[in-house]
Length: 495
Image 1 (cartoon, rainbow, N blue to C red):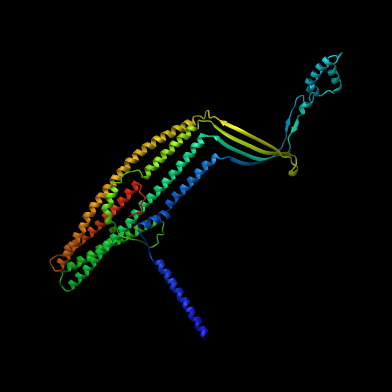
Image 2: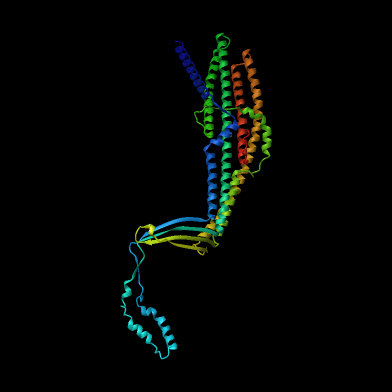
C-alpha cells in the first residue's frame, strides 16, 4: 500500500513538473522580441537576403580571379584514342618492283670503277650480264598497290601547354582584381542601403507608436470628459448639448485611434520584413522618438560640416568602373601584340589486328615545340572593340559628373531639411508646453462654469496636434539624417 502511494506521489510530481515546464515554455514563447536600433541593424545585416547575395557575389568574384590566375600555370591533359580501320589505305609505288631500275645508279658507279681498275674490261659488260640474269618485270605490277596499317589503332599520352609571352593575358589579371574591388564596393553599398532602410523603418515604428499613444491619451481624455459631463448632466449641472457634444467627441476619436493602431502594425510588418523575421513574430522596438531630442542640435552641427563625397558608394563604384574600363582598354590594345607559347606531347601508340592487349607493342612518341602567333587581320573586330571601350569611358565620365552634381544637391536638400526640422522641433516643443497649459486652463474654466465645452474641445485638439507635430519633427529629422549618412557613405550603427 505504501509503495502504491509512493508511486502515485512520484507520478503526480512528474506530471506537475511537466505542466510547469510546458507553461514556462509557452510563456517564454509569448514574450515579444524586444530590440533597439543597433540590434535591428545587426539582425538585418546578418539575415537580410540582399546583403547575403552581395556577400556571395564577392566570393564568386574572388573565385573568378583565381580562375584567371590559373591561365598562367601549365595546362596538362591526359588523352586516349582508339580507332577501328574499316578499309585500309592503299599505297602505290611506280617502279618499286623493277630492281634493275632501282639499282641503276649503283651499277653505273661499278661500271666506271671496273673500266678504270680492270685491264681489258669492256664497258657495259656488267650491265649485260645483270640484265641477262634478271627476270623481266611486268610494267603493270606496281599498279596493284600495297595495303597499309592494321585493324586496331591505339594511342594514349599527355599534352601540356604554357603561355610564355601573352601580354593580353597578364592585363586580364589586373581586370579581375578590379572586378573584385567593384564587388566589394557593391556589397558595401548594399549594406549602406540596408542600414538606411532599417533606420527609417525603425523610426517609422517609433513614430507610429508615439502617434498611437497620443491618440490613445486624447481618447482617454475624451472618455473621462464624457463620463464627467454625464455625471454633471445627471445632477442637472450641464445642458444636454454638452453631453451630446462630449459623446460625439469620443466617437470622432475612435477612427483616428484605429488608424493609428493599423499604422503601427503595418510599420512593424515592414521592419520585420527588412530584418528577415517571421511576420507573425511579436516584435517590440525599444525606446521612443523623444529619446533622440537630446542629440538633435549637436548631431546637426556635427553632420552639417561633413559634406564630402569621398566615401559615397555610388561615386566609388563609378571610379572602379572607370578603372575597370581603363584596364580593359589596355588589355584590348595588347591583343595586337604577338604571343609565344610552349607545348609538349608525349604519347604511346600501338597497332594490331586483334584485342590481345598484353601482346601489343607500344611505341613512344614525343614532341616539344614553341609556337608564335602574330595577329595580322581579324576583319577589324579588335579595333572596333577598342573604339567601343573608349566611348564607354567617355560615357562613364559624363555620368559621373552628373551623378556628382545630383549628390551635392541631395546633401544640400538633406542639410536644409535637417535645419528646418530643428526649427520645427523647437517650435513644436514650445507649442506642446503652451497647448498643455491651455488645456489645463480650459478644463478648470469649464469645471467652474466660466468656460464652455467648445473651448475645452478646442484646447484638447490643439494639444493633440502639437504633440503629433512634435513627434513628426523628430521623425523627419532622423529620416533626413539617415538619408544624409547614406549620401555621405556612412556605415555607422549609432542612433
